[in-house]
Length: 249
Ligand SMILES: [Zn+2]
Figure 1: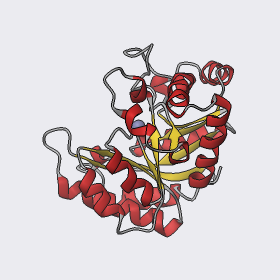
Figure 2 (figure 1 turned 60 degrees about the vertical axis):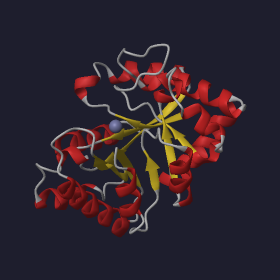
Figure 3 (figure 1 turned 90 degrees about the horizontal axis):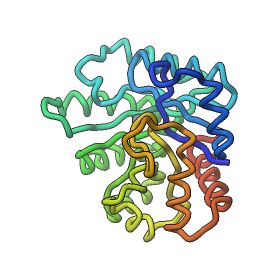
Figure 4 (figure 1 turned 90 degrees about the vertical axis):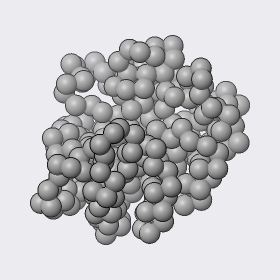
C-alpha cells in the first residue's frame, strides 16, 4: 500500500470523499496527507484529518500568501499545529516564478514558519520554485527535516537536499515525456524519495491534462519502480519507511 504524501483535498476538488478514498484503496493507496496552504485550506485540511483515520494534515502559508498574511495568522498556525493529526508544517517556501512576487516578504514568512517547525519539532514540506539557492541557504539555518515537495531539480541539487536530511517528493512529473527526473532518480536511491500526487494538479501520464486524484499514485509508482528496477511491493515498503522517518506515521 502506498501513501500519497501531498494532495489537496478541499471540497472544491472532491465531490464524494468516500468514493475517492475507495477508488484510491482499490489502486493500492491507503494513506493521504492533505496539504493546506492558506487560512481557509488549513482549516479544511484539519477538519478532514479529524474525520478520516487515514487522512493526515500538514498546514502552513504558501509563499503566495506572503503579501496577505498578518502577524496573528502565525499565532493561529501555532495553535493549529498542536493538533494530533497535524504532522508537519507546509506547504511553505519560496516562489519566484510569477512576476510581482515580494522576495523579502516571502523570506520573512518562510523564516517565521521554519522557526515554528523547529520549536514544535515538526517536519516541513517545502515548496520551492525558481528559488533553489535561497531555499537551501535559509533551510541550512534551521534544525529541520522534511520533504522537498514536487522535486524536479538537478542531481546536484538533489544531493544537497538529501545531505541536509530531506526526502524528495516525486509526483506525476516523473511520467512526463520531456522530464529529466527519471535520469536524475536513476543516480539516487529509493531511500531518498516519497510519493505524492499534488492532486488536483500534475496528473501523470496517461491522464495528463485531466483532474488528478490520489488513486493515480499507481502510475507514478510504476514509472519509479522501473527506474530503480525494483518491484512495486519493494517500492511501497521503502517509501512508507521514508514517510515514517520524516512524519512518524
Ligand atoms: Zn501542493
